Length: 397
Ligand SMILES: [Zn+2]
Image (tube, rainbow, N blue to C red):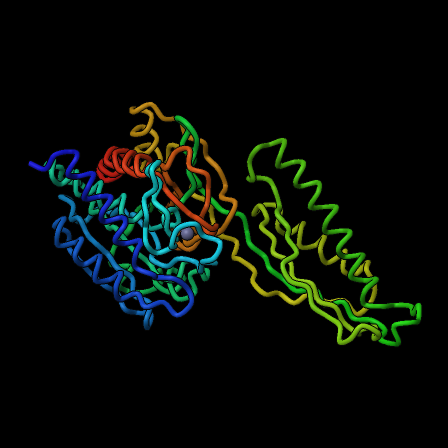
């Protein structure tokens, strides 16, 4: 018999080992992750597969075979890649997985999303030791390239024969933590749209007050965007959630050749996330602003997210019912939300797989992509316990 304390030690050690693999963008070598996960599969007693449909971007699957193999399976998904670090801004080395005196484990990926992958696996380990046998097959999946938008990952994998053979009926993917006894569950995402606005105008000597300059047009555009942004901010503070909020940020600004020359062009790049139902109206509004700003202004799309479906949360979704019952039974409430950012979940939903974005690391401030990303060891372990309630419920749905 493995004691609870031993199980906790194993879980924390595995988490720290995984965090020490620098699977960081760009040009990631995923092979150390693949090796590490293969060892986990052996330890826990799970079937191990690697899909290599996308060169240098493997997808790893650890399978806990169910009693009724023909039923659609459950996918527990996380991504292996992490975003770059500014090491001088960290108080701990970002790939050492140090633990401080409060039990906080510091590392890039501690929240986004190496914790999630290990929590699924450690929950499965515990369930197996208790002799639990799942009804539906459970696939714990580790995908590459989520942080670059899934271009070399989920976007391609969902269309492969390997993926289709998994016969997935429901998926859990990354999410963000709630507070206290309220769990946050994402059932959809806002639609991302990044674009560059080209403002062209009269060039000339820097001493002249010329008409029709690129700068004046840029100013008009900025005024419109920032007024709208202010309104959205007020609404967000009032509603305390981002479901119906459009986020707008100016992320790049270019133009000019030298200080005494009025340039013929300025360009502005905006990153926006728009509630799916508001998207067409927002696009129209942006086009109108550009028209009103004067002639010779055009929009270059950099990335326009698809119109992806949401996951239904009514009685027709047996996995939602099972999930809800399982967490209510142990005293949790659910706050259903539209996610503020985009993740691979949107591609699973597009492939007709009902998907929830979920992380039970209650009370943890969201620090994905931030300096000193950390997760507290007690929170990490509590989440494993929660998954041991959720996974069998989903598998038995
Ligand atoms: Zn992530």
